[in-house]
Image (cartoon, rainbow, N blue to C red; front, side, top):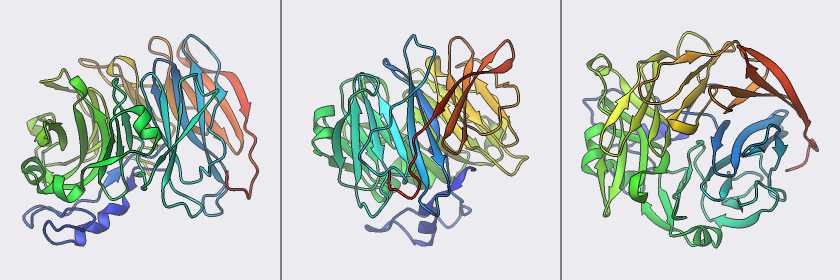
Length: 375
């Protein structure tokens, strides 16, 4: 799996800003952009614990790919399988959380909407919900504010908002913006916005979104302040002025950027951004196969050839982890600077923990998968 070309890239065929156009083409003076997005495999840390999303099973073409959710409760050392039951998950899972975790099921098996599930007890019990739309195929397609307000990024680039967790569960969503409207705004025109790749909440529960810009040297991060979208992204060093910038991930005060053949992490204190030194993303055929955020603004990326890079937060430096165990699908932050590597082989999940500079096997979970079924 690699950094993916989003289906929305076909919208580059559109001419101008038009209602109903699935994406927004950059001005003719800017070069075409192949939209990159991060795969769905990821991990996140909430008050309940650390969660990981990975695909298991077999071929997606035969609908034998089954997305799974695992949790390591706060203070615990072992992982548990907690995938919500009763809904086909071949299309992928996206998750976000605060006091509760919200999981969204991307449409599959003929579904035209995205079922939701919410848990406040580390996945022991789930409350069903509904988003009557198609969630985007990106890991940061859902965001939950401390207040419970929820955002959902749709496949067409639009953003839906629910006023509370209860409203999201009840299917009470309203349109916050469309890709066309965001691209036509002053900051959207300023970056030549082509696609929206992530949603989150910034300080004071301000809705934020980010995406891919055709105009070179501009990082497309936007904040909704009183119903007006404003540019809220970092300013990149002069050395990246010739690169088109795409935001692959966005989480509260941290972002993962792709600029040319490099990856950058960036952190906001609510008014000013700190941008890391670059780390090379190119040089192999695999590209970025997974990414995520951890405590303190830490960022991690899985690259091809068994490579992984992590950075601890503002002022930190990228650190290469030891060569990953075979089949590693995602990483999850542990205590201190340690990480767990979750490796997949069919229906078997093996957890490896980084200790004293080496990966040590600590757990095996055999996931019950019925091949040929829908979930």
